[in-house]
Image (cartoon, rainbow, N blue to C red; front, side, top):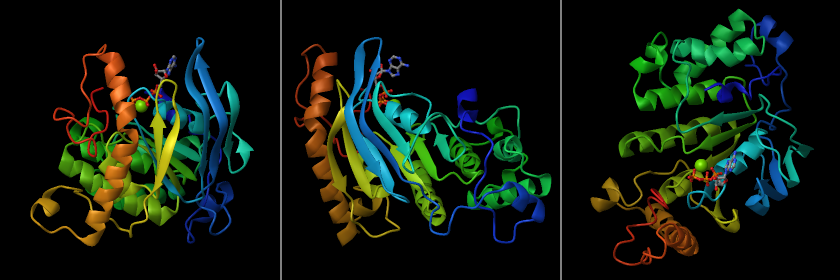
Length: 325
Ligand SMILES: Nc1ncnc2c1ncn2[C@@H]1O[C@H](COP(=O)(O)OP(=O)(O)OP(=O)(O)O)[C@@H](O)[C@H]1O
Ligand SMILES: [Mg+2]
């Protein structure tokens, strides 16, 4: 639970143009156009108790880029996020944030996990205000920022609700608002919508696209669902397993905002657009590139009693890559 507070620290970024004088005193504003930071893993290897989890992983993330990581379970996607968050140190290689080696968590890098992990004893508005309080933001500026964030995630009416009084999707929106509170320059999502139903997931994908792009925050988003990666990513990096490594990448050159429901309702109703068709093709390419990896994991775990995922029992890997593996 408290892991989510690790990134909360001393500094703040970018006040509103009309911020109260009290806020200006404590907030630091990045140069215009520098909202999103760059990040990089350079030749990163990671071992736990002699077992190699990641091997020679190099990934560059450009400022403001939306990068998605997909790959089979156990490949090390969460570990890559933890490295970027500064929660884990590499055994070899370097992790850089804006060209500077990452030495620990910081408020400029926020993490949103699968489980929203809002503090259950605090109301929604107090949850969102919490990182601002820790950062020493004055009460007036804090209240202003909380109002703005509640509006952003369409939860103003629920400001006084406790997490248990909110739906799963609302809690996730609350967690996103809290993560954005200190205006991080990079936001790291670890399968944030995996526990939600399809409609809610699609709604929140649209919200993330809107919110993250409006703030020009750099995003690294881990997901099992290839359709989600194609919806949200400017680029999708494919992570293989045993040991975890980069096995490929695909650029998603589709206009934004993108439509959801890849292969879903609209397509089923015959309303597929050119973009939908392109998205399906990209998703298929990703699925093709990593099918061998999914097979490899499944075969190992099923002790050889596994047929190819491209066979009749493999399901559609474009949608839920490796889920349940
Ligand atoms: N703290 C740790 N100690 C030992 N091993 C760990 C630790 N954290 C992760 N691992 C191992 O590292 C490997 C990668 O784990 P990680 O959680 O990063 O994979 P993942 O790609 O996020 O998987 P999933 O898709 O299931 O979430 C796994 O084999 C896991 O057992
Ligand atoms: Mg994970």
